[in-house]
Image 1 (spheres, rainbow, N blue to C red):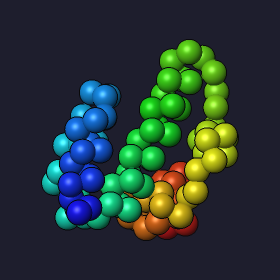
Image 2 (cartoon, rainbow, N blue to C red):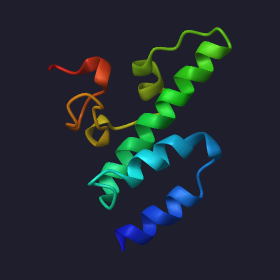
Image 3 (cartoon, rainbow, N blue to C red):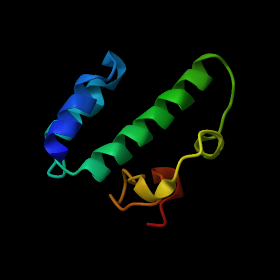
Length: 92
């Protein structure tokens, strides 16, 4: 089931994802596999951008998304909670 897949996936993540796991645990869509995958992809991109900032390399999020071949249709905006775009691209 999706809940088992999600549990296995979340348990296999490194500690850098702990904050995301905690926030997902309290979210009403926590058992929706597409929602969880979207949030994980958002977090991975955020962590890659943070790492780039730490080493002094400026890499726009859009470049990271293209570089990794990500499909934005599963990305969830943190501002409006709609699929298909990042918060910095939110039309609202």
